[in-house]
Image (cartoon, rainbow, N blue to C red; front, side, top):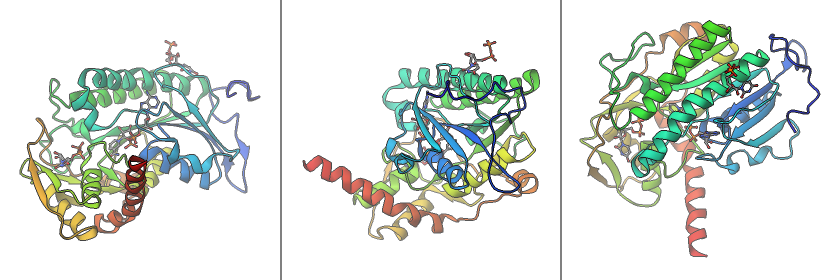
Length: 347
Ligand code: NAD
Ligand code: UDP
Ligand code: UDP
């Protein structure tokens, strides 16, 4: 039981519960909300590997126990099934707040329920985690998104750009939800002196991505493995910049540990059209894969590419893994999961 752990009430310094670990560094107790998801589970791996205590909070909306199962039995790891929309009492040093229903397909198939859940999670979930950070003096990191830039009129996007979001568009629930979460984060920083960090994450891919959540990399990779045509939306000339998940996790940790609030763009500046991405997927998995064009969704951003000068300079961070190096690293994970699904269906 978290609440009964005999940690003294923090005094605002966020350091009360720290346990010495080795020379020069103390073992931290860290919460990762959304830690059973794609990015969260890789972050958890890194934090556990460096010797910290990790508490994952997840309601398994899109996350999976399988993503963190390898830590079960480790006394430094805990998994709490909990919806961040509800308050929670914990004593920790750092809070990585990733929980968010982030998958585009859900917007299309269950729009009203998804939109409400998205907005409530971004507002109430972020508020609760900020309230928790305030009470215990923990440092709070928000995973915001490049979608706060909307369909950008500035290219590449710098953190100083305020964005071009259509407030009444079909994707605006996600964009506006994250914009509100950023606002709350800065309000708690200014008004309650909570130590905060804001990351604006650009399109990220890697093992453990949801297979069927509709994002382009997971769609193309799964389609190529299943020998289905790669579905390119619109004319395929829109661009995105794809970052491998380990680069993102390194960036999140550098941001949390650093002295700067941000926001910081965390993304790989390598920019690809969707047709170019389809070619890389073909080269990597199946050169005979075909392309099928489908209508695009409204308000789809035409281009996106991070300007990462701020993170390079202040966090000493930049991505190391190119798309051609990173894509092969997710293929066997997808192959295994798709194979298991197929076997499951046959039973
Ligand atoms: P994901 O869907 O794999 O992970 C999100 C996790 O949050 C899931 O485990 C889900 O079950 C959990 N969750 C959702 N609502 C919750 C709630 N109310 N209470 C508790 N847990 C809840 O997505 P991801 O790609 O790992 O994204 C992680 C974060 O990074 C999200 O905040 C997302 O908006 C942000 N982000 C991701 C990308 C990307 O390309 N992957 C890009 C920009 C921003
Ligand atoms: N909260 C929480 N855990 C805590 C402290 C606060 O979940 O340890 C929640 C609290 O229930 C509230 C939100 O965070 O809904 C904001 O808390 P804050 O103290 O800032 O606001 P207040 O409770 O004074 O309205
Ligand atoms: N897209 C595509 N085929 C797909 C899924 C997405 O061409 O099967 C396009 C989509 O229209 C968008 C881009 O890929 O232009 C990135 O979409 P994703 O949902 O992955 O990320 P986001 O739009 O949030 O950047």
